[in-house]
Image (cartoon, rainbow, N blue to C red; front, side):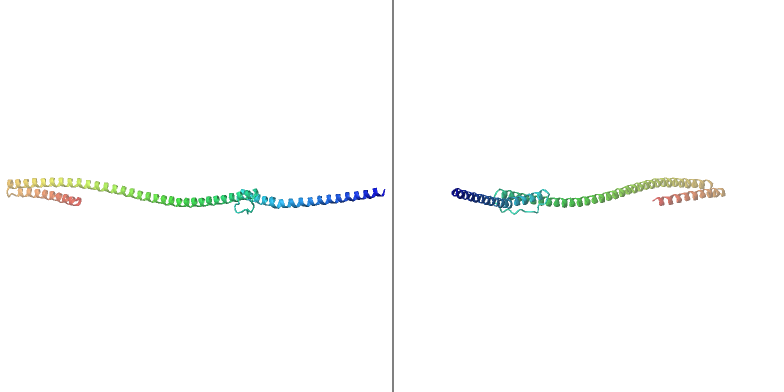
Length: 219
């Protein structure tokens, strides 16, 4: 019985030792698992979270964030690709911004040129209107001068005709005086008639003088 008891105690001790070893191994495995999970988190989850933050910033339009790529695995390749994409987008946006600035500058220059052209057109229109007004006034003046010249020509013709008529009347009066003088001799009646004819001649001469003055005035 003592031997059986001793064997039983030895078996129980071995069982307790085995349980202790199993518990220690389990605890060690648990610690190693936690450590492995922490390492995996540090090596994968944290960089992946940073990568996701950069992607979200890029998606929202913020291209100022850069990724520090120091890995050679697949996650490192992903980070390098995202970093290249960010740089390319940054350069593209910069080029678009420069292009927009150049377009805005060109639009301002075009607007200035358009304003200058419009001002030139308005000035040219004003000058054209002034020239048209001057030509209209000149045409009216020429027409007035032509009308005055025509009237002066007609008046000169009339004056010439009246002068010729006066000359004819004078010649006829002189001829009549000569005939009268030869007919009546030195009689008083002849003198009276001569005086009347002389008065007529004076009237004719007054008419001729008036016509001559009108002719000089028209000339």
